[in-house]
Image (cartoon, rainbow, N blue to C red; front, top):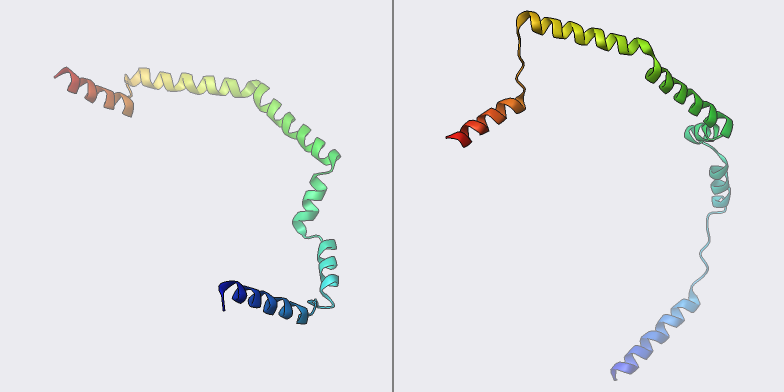
Length: 116
C-alpha cells in the first residue's frame, strides 16, 4: 500500500464513523434553566439598574458637585489653615527651631564629598 491509499482508507473510515453518530441531545430542562437564570436578577444587577436611571444618576452628580463646591468655597477652612500656620510659625520663632529635611541632609553630605 502506498501512502495515498492509506490516507484514502483513513478518510473513508472517518466518514463512515460520522454517518453512525447521532445528534447530541441536551437535558430537556436545560433551556428552562437557562431562561430562568437570564430572567433572574441578582443584587448587583438590581442596584446597577437603579443607579443607571437618568434621574438617579443626575441627582447623584448634582449632590457630589454641591459637596465639592461647599468644600472649595467654604471660607471657614481657609481661616483655620491660616491660624494653624501662624501658630506653628510662632512656636518655631519662640524656640528658634530650624527643621532639616532628609533631602537637605543628603544634599549636605553630597556637597561635602564634592568639596573634598
